[in-house]
Length: 120
Image (cartoon, rainbow, N blue to C red; front, side, top):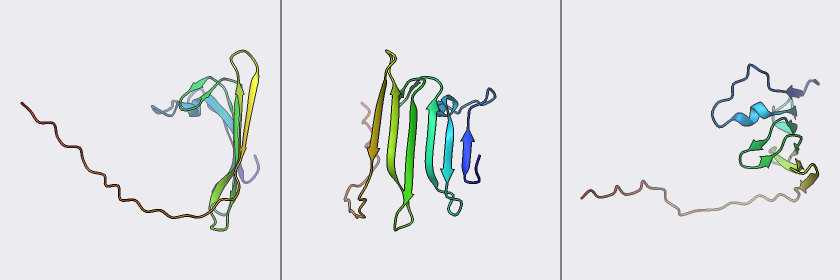
């Protein structure tokens, strides 16, 4: 591919680690900024049904485009998901992200270990 583009596809030798079987079921490309190695765009096609956090059927596709902001961080500008439906149709979802604003927050939540249950 191009100097700042990588093509990926699973091979028959690939054995995914538990919980990462998504990588064995997609193929696609990603582009990166050669200066920072940050991903600037990624797209992939689903080769087998995926039933993890987001259910995607074989034939679906996903793409995301990111852009560098004034703080030199890459943030999403567009996400597109094309769902292949069970009855053969498709459903297209596209979301544009704009007007990111910097903010700060404070929290008083304290994380502690739970009390041990008492034994009788």
